[in-house]
Image 1 (cartoon, rainbow, N blue to C red):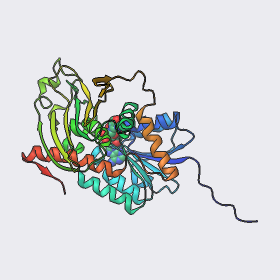
Image 2: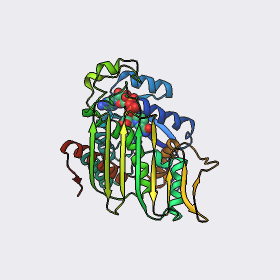
Image 3: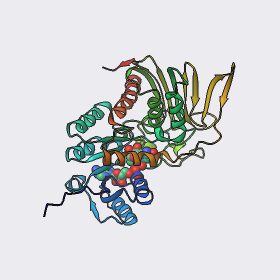
Image 4: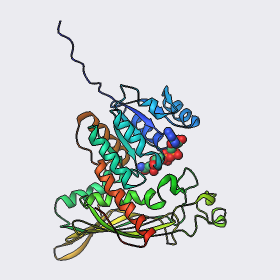
Length: 359
Ligand SMILES: NC(=O)c1ccc[n+]([C@@H]2O[C@H](COP(=O)([O-])OP(=O)(O)OC[C@H]3O[C@@H](n4cnc5c(N)ncnc54)[C@H](O)[C@@H]3O)[C@@H](O)[C@H]2O)c1
């Protein structure tokens, strides 16, 4: 009898490095929406409590304190890296080296040097590296993408990115520690708006950046404990990130992107959006609106119904499809690296007071 050909299992077998808040969100979507395509094989976390919480909730028996032990599981196809930012690069490089495909949460890394090493590890090991950017998959972003691809915008010249909270300093996790996160609101929430705007601009290469950062509320006890604290009692004593970052980035195609990101801005209300300006038309992301000339007049187009599904679910589906079929990811490591250069450039310029140029 001829030997039976080994067939690839139809489910992608995944493991987790970090099993905290966002990892459990992945697990929820994998088990509720993608159960036919994904099997959660193992989880790892340095915290017993996190392992117990995720393991018990999702019925996962294989639990590891050290992610390197989990990577020894041969049948693991893919790894989701969901640790704090300072622990994105090494676990990603280790997982790729162990022959696993990787999705790593945003921001890709602490800085562009780490991000470049991660991209190299993906290439060297011929494994897929996806960055957990979800806003590019949002239905509203896809509408803008289709309009740009149809040529409605002409050349996209400028993106104004805003991720501004009036008062919303995280009082959980390590989001206020520069040594563990790489920065504050710009690397944490600004990155979301930057990634989608940069993607819609056609992912041009950054060539120079200028920026400033300011801290004026996060490190103040009276603000953390005051009535107008937003989320109360954040760790003001170890607050080492900016409250507000602003930056300007120029790209190799001549386009420009500006970014404003804050955990505590003195503005009327929170803004989490971008505006794109092209030669022939423009758009606003949230609420979605297109601006153009039609029949000799200027018109604002507000879609009646956008539809589509949550971008976070689409990002996971795209990753799993890439693992299954070998298709190119929509959020590859190379895009993450350019976004990281933008973040780095603004932070480095803020430190030096000079324009930063990229090689
Ligand atoms: N895409 C999004 O919308 C989104 C939303 C929230 C968080 N995130 C990103 O996800 C990442 C994690 O954020 P979170 O909110 O889940 O934080 P979290 O604190 O809830 O979870 C992080 C987990 O990593 C674990 N960990 C720490 N050191 C470890 C180690 N050495 N080995 C294994 N595990 C370790 C912690 O114990 C914790 O359980 C961050 O990079 C954050 O930016 C993304």
